[in-house]
Length: 165
Image (tube, rainbow, N blue to C red):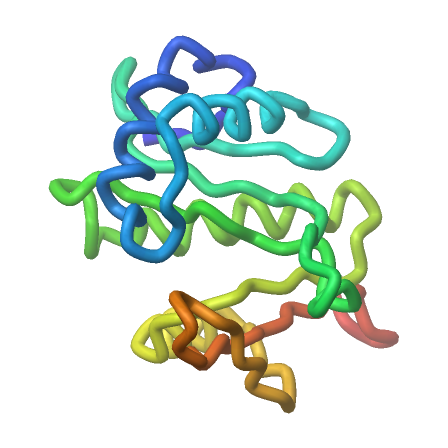
């Protein structure tokens, strides 16, 4: 298993787009074409937005992205990690942690001091906390079909502190 840039696996974009649509259609209804277009924007390696993929053999089995925050309401929380997806058969094998660590390392090499993640499922908070992420003090609410839903915002500080190795 290795981590690579989506740029090197662009032929997988249609399949990844289908995975995203099938997994998240309830929370982010988008057309397959719109999802593909967003993924095509993430084929960068030195600027945002960018995406990484987990590859086993010659198959993409997971992905994660780092993008600029596009929300006006949450504009101070940027950049954000988004679209962490692992194919079902590869879940619960530390692959999600590997992808999050890889994308945060890339962000740090790009000079980013902090990264954020937005979660609508409180059960996912513990996963990020194990990786050193800390909740932002406020829990933001957003409207989903006229229902206010909690949005958990977590932050990872990438700056090295004085005296750290």
